Length: 361
Image (tube, rainbow, N blue to C red; front, side, top):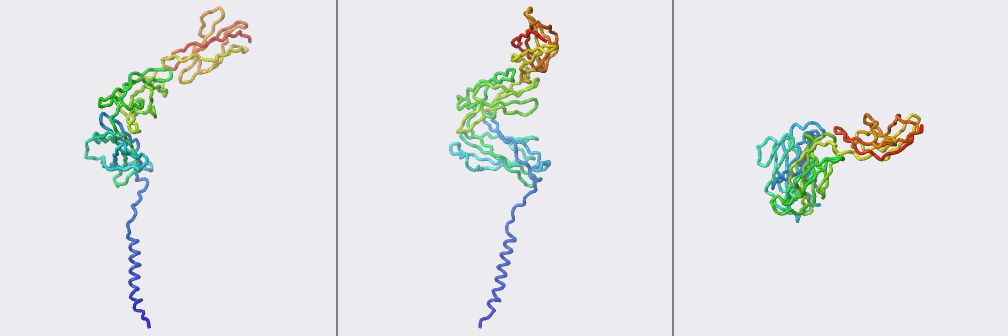
């Protein structure tokens, strides 16, 4: 007759195994807690590079807000990840790989080559190998150790940059400011220039930041800045761009020049002037010029006996229509119109071709 003792003895073993499985599940490694969005710093903006002599300067803006736009009051520092690969072996479509991580604490201690201002961080690298692709990625970290999303990777293909172009002149044009320059003759180490791919033009308005006006390098050695306002002051500087292993390497910036935009070039002649008789006057109409070129117009009239026309408008006409009541029936008149440039100079342009009309009310 079978006994139940073996079954009774196995029961604690089954219960023990079940309990062990339960405890193992309950005591397993927990996932990292997810920080509320309001405690997560916003990502890094403005990660960029500049060249000064043989040094590469990496910089970025210090975030001021959390992800929910609340003030970021507990920023502790940044993690900077760096990678370096021979340009000839670098895979641009492969995932980014970083071999080194650097911690930058806002409260120091100060380190050589690291400069922290109120709004921006700069890292200066001097031991650079020509023919190397350098990768940089930055994240902000608060005092609780919560990190922002990493920035987009900044990729710099390093070689010896070109010397900066020589900014030769700024000229006032009717349509804007013309920037002129000479090509660099050497690399920054004195060797003959090579690999020139074009130029970049930068502008500063008042105390504002520098803005790149040319998204792509220019191959010409001039540029006309048409986004200007009368009476405003502008500063310009340039960079030469060298092609290296399929990438573009910017030179140090050129010396800057400044200019105040005042429209001193007279506007062009007005076109399509038409004259018609109305019951009480001669009505004149014409094709208007762009409003940023002119502030108005003057009208001129002469008779067949007069060789020199007389201006008949005491004030500038801002419209493109004008009526002259000072006319006599049956008399032929000759009319012309001129455009007046923007203030403060208000340079008057040439008169249009004359139109003839015999006034018949």
